[in-house]
Amino acid sequence: MTANTTSSAQTLQDYLDQGLRGMWYPVLASWEIGNNPVGITRLEQQIVVWRDGDGAIHALEDRCPHRGARLSMGWNLGDRIACWYHGVEVGGDGTVKDVPAVDRCPLVGQKCLRSYPAKEAYGAVFLYFGVTADEEPAELTFPPELADEAAYSNFLCTASWDCNYQYALENVMDPMHGTYLHSSSHSMAEGDRKADMALEPTENGFIFKKNGQIGVNFDWVEFGSSGAYWMRLSIPYKKRFGPGGHFWIIGMVVPEDKDHCRVFFWRIRKVKDWQRDMWRFMYRNRLESLHWDVLEQDRIVLENMAPNARGREYLYQHDVGLSRLRRMMQKEAQKQLAKLSELEAAQ
Image (cartoon, rainbow, N blue to C red; front, side):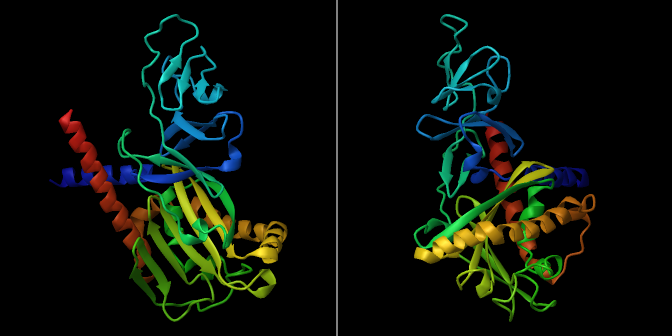
C-alpha cells in the first residue's frame, strides 16, 4: 500500500514538473518570429512556430511525419512548412499537403502531426496545451491592465531561467522576499522587515498580502486563472520615475522542461497623451536596466537552489500563498491525470 501511494505521488509530481495542461501559455515574444520557422521546447514538447503571409501564427509538432527531421530546419511556405530533408509539406493543421518526391503518395491528406491553437497578444505568442491533442481551447482573458490598451501602456520583459517553472511561480507568490533579496533595489528598499500575511479569495484566484503595509514595497500579489495562470502586483514608485499611481506588473511562466522555464513580465503604467510618450521614453532609457537587475537577482537565487529544495522545506506563515498555489495545482494535476487514465482505459 505504501509503495502504491509513493508511486502515485511521484507520478503527480512528475506531471506537475512537466507543466499543467488545459491552458494557454506565452511561448515567445512576438518579435522572435520573423520569416523563418522557429523551433522551441515547451512543456517538454518540441514545437515549430511560424507566420504565414498574413502574419498569423501556426504551431505544430517539430517533426516531419516522413523520417522525423526537424521541420523548424525547413522552409516557410506560408500556410504550410516544407521539410529540409525531403521537401514534405505539412499544413498548419498538421495535415500533409504534398510529397513532391513521389506521385500519389498516401501520406498526402493525412493529419499526421499535432497542431497547437495560437494567439498573439500584447507582444507575446500564446499556444494552447490541451490535456488531450483534440481538446477545444479554453477562453483566454487578461487582467485589465493588459486588456485596456487605451488606458495602460506596457513593455514585455522575457527571459529563460535554468529552474523548474514552479520555482518561478512561487517566487512571485512570495511578497516577503522583496524586502530582503531586493533590498538594494530602486523601488523595494523600504518597508518593515517583518509582517503578518493574509490570504483573500477572488473571482479568479486569490490575493496574498502583508497586513498593515500597502504601497510601500512589494506588499501584495494576486494569482489568477482565466485561461492562463497569471500573477499581478504593483510596486510603489516615486515621482522621479514617471507619472504617479501604480506601477503594475503582470507575470506568467511557461515550462520548457523539468529544469528550464521562460518567464514573461509585462511592466505597466496607467498613462495617456504626452505622459505615455514620456514614460515610454524614460522606461527604455532608464528604468528597463533597473528592472533587469531585479530579475537577475531572482534568477540567480532560483537557479542555485539546493538539490530537491522543495522536498526539504520548513515552511512558515509567510508561505501560506505558495502553499495554497501548490494545493490548487496538485488538485488540477490529479483531475488531468484521472482524465488521461480514463481515456487510456477506454481504448
